[in-house]
Image 1: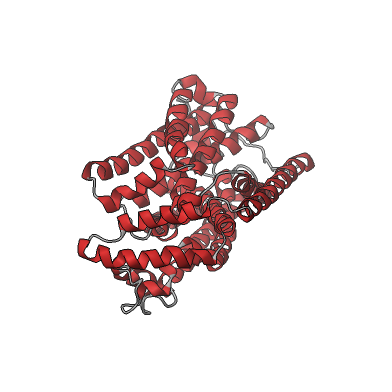
Image 2: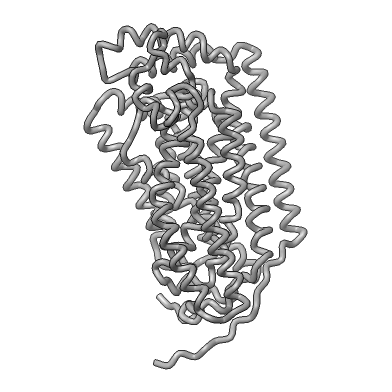
Length: 463
């Protein structure tokens, strides 16, 4: 069958004033909610709040998790008593809550940056044809990577003692009453080659190297895309294929270790061998929903002429399939821990299933991230309709924001955690700034690479 070569007109995204205005409204609403939430958290604490209860919760958990070694439990109990009574009083509850929500939102949006690049790399490595018309959208999402890197580094130095229990030097002092045998064994993972409790050189080096590598691959792939727009040869596409393959290998390791470092180490005693996969699954499906939402919105606004119902169907299928994949990983991790019933593992879920506000989020998580996408995107038609995609994608994004809330907050706040205007406001601020960066980046390149060797295949794509 002969293929007719179809000429594709240049499409350039225009960041219209009304779009900017909407984002400013979103940013303003976020700042307003953030301010009201912060003031209310401070005044609530001034009135005496539920501060003490939190320490009992923290203490109860610490004792449950204290160590595998039951003989050590008695001596450690005393140490954790001292810790619960003393150390946490240094930082006000409202401030810990602020730190917690900043870290939670930052890590959530880190994922939306790197998944954009990951999506593009997969398309090149798999020689995928269908996606040629949408590749520039996830590429623009990758623009967030350097900003995310700076934010993560700054926030870590600002908040680390309150978010990461393992950063306290007294845990590594053999002679001290608060020495923690279990955390001390993990010291090389954070502090190598320095002694435990000093500066976490190995940890910070990983953070800098990961963001550095992700940004490097992002710039390489983007540069080749720009060159391809000028020079119609296939050389740049092949270069990107090689670069993408190397990136995917590095991403496989770095994304898992990043999940351990930035999320799992908050609950320092606890660990799960599936956690890297779990965080990736949550990031990945959120990233797919974001790509689909931006593509659907651009299509509604009259852009992306090369994208038809078949391409939307594929994006919808991705959101549908990986919502199920996330559920599979969620259930796999939960079932293994439930079935083994080892106290130092189960405490992670008990904290989240029994305490407010985490308990309702724990169950809500399954409904909003599995049941709703599953039912709404089940039929063929639903995946091909802009209106349905524009309904389901925000549900998935918000659902996984809750997922990350439950990964981060209980470990930091214990029973003092809250979900209110402060958390919602922070999310809106991040979302507005993120969209400014991504849409601004979209204006810099044509929306579709007309010299992409896969574009003709994409135009004829039919499922």
